[in-house]
Image 1 (cartoon, rainbow, N blue to C red):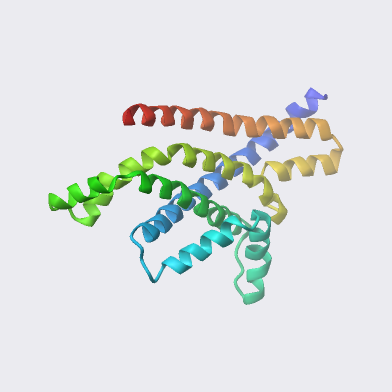
Image 2: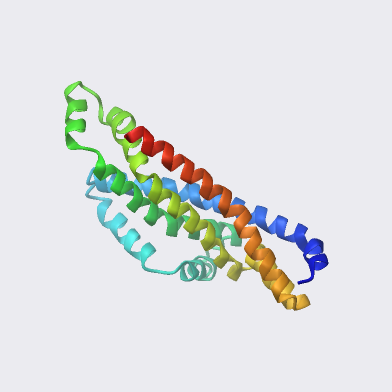
Length: 217
């Protein structure tokens, strides 16, 4: 293991790591928005949107991110819609993550007892107030473990986006291996980089989950 080589190329991995975090953040935030929207459509049984949401969830969960990226980056251009590689990567992560977040929120929404909603209606709360003060706090608390797992999953899925030539950690690793044939060193830096990104997030999410669990008890 050539540690001088690792030291020399550490800045390259720092830059790639920052890019990966930025990409993950956008993808996760959008997937949360999509997940909540899909859950609300199914929870309130919006007839016009139900088939669209169900179809989206099935397509999203049953196709790999790699195929989704190919479609967004190469397929849409055939129809005259040319998106940047970064936009395609964010859209791909959001498209994939949205369906998983929807399932997480669905479990949380279903955990809210109907009697609580009926009690809220009896004191003249509007549907918006019920959603904000009764349903969402409890649903979010129940959903935290599943949401946390999805967040980690999406960060790890960013390893696929190098296929559309974005400078993430995997792209940097392949670049070094291709140019210098320093496979062990490149893979070592890749593993350490993902650990530095994911481990603190996992610990924070674990702490948040414990806090929520204590609050429910």
